[in-house]
Image (cartoon, rainbow over all chains, first blue to last red; front, side, top):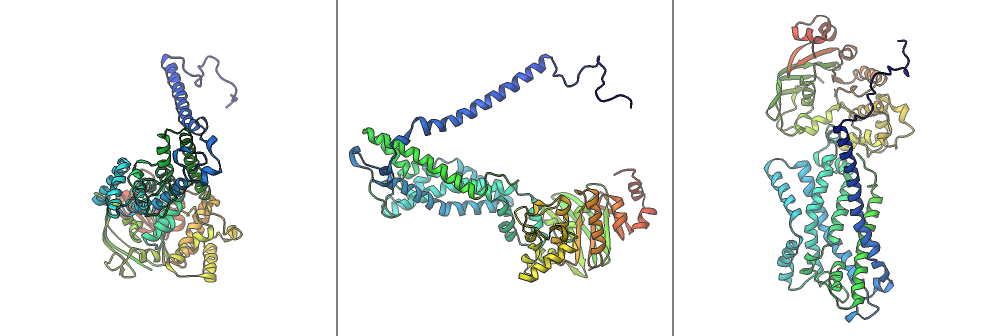
Length: 298
Length: 250
């Protein structure tokens, strides 16, 4: 017990010194490579967003007219994307109206009540739906709504987008419901609560921020959809006149104007793309701010 | 309330966890379940308030009579059993999104047994019974996670007590606690015994010695021996019991 902490046998090798073997050097090298690559690719991914926002610079063409006015024919000056912005908000709202509840109830079924074969079938189908090209859902809404009603409509577009939302909401929600510890469900059940009450009052509040994140993700996804809207909402260069009439959307307007021969309209397409990204960012930040989604709860 | 367990078997999927367990428990006593990890003692107490069946693929066979009533009878719903037979878990499982008050008020709210000022009084008396009132009376609205681990476990006891159960099951309630909190919980068990029948799982044999009137020894899913705690520790009848309490295995 006489030796103090600082004393050591000078001939003993330092166990903390990195090994100088070839294997050790190779290990350090591959570790360094991974760090560099991960950083590089992360920057590249963010770079795409920065390029879209600041280099393409749609912001130059944004003015008050852009938000309020109708598109002008033949690229005459003073036109805007008022109905397109309004339409996108309405379409995403319609889609959320039934996409979110259906998605959440599917997730609750899968996570809390689903057992056995039926649950596995449902889960596989939901997985499959996530991978189905979105134009198929447009086709579906076209067959069941546009054809019988004999008109393109915002409603049909909302239905198509809503179906696209279901599997996204369902999968993300199911994942966060699984993250709620079993002990918390048991706390409620052991006091005599029913499974329904446990789900509604314990599990969902605990998972709320994650559920909201999933919902925002799904809303952002469908806000950017174009293909399913081509055969449902169709677009219009007039004012939107109700959800059972053709309805314009930012993506549709951007799509049409990008192909336009008039430079003014092409510029407005960039501006429309910018507004779309901005809209998604703002929704995402506000919703997550209100639900405290920036802090992970567990 | 008195327990009578007859021929109880329990499974997790195809794996049998309990084999033909028979046991009687007198009212207003503390009974300790001891045995090595995985011996089935936790499974056993979870069968007593029908929490075992909450584990996917879990199954129970046998009879559990509480004051003569079969809690596994076809007409009985698990939630009514759990309302009368409270449970405290190994890890303090307070609800992190709720306040201290709301955590204790959970049971009465679920079962509709108290409202308004009656509920407030019930929460206060439950926290007092759990020896936590003085520490939290000024911050009932604070989130339950603001409490220390030992306080959280006493909060869980208060939550169970607020339901006014006749029986309290405790599944290793002190395993996540420091010695001082453990002592507090043990003193609490002594007081609660006056009004409740308590069954406590522990792998700490000295704890069983301190709190339990009777002790039951489990091994590999079988009830090996049960008896007066002092008697069991000083003169075990079975060789397995003697080996375990003398520290030769487990």
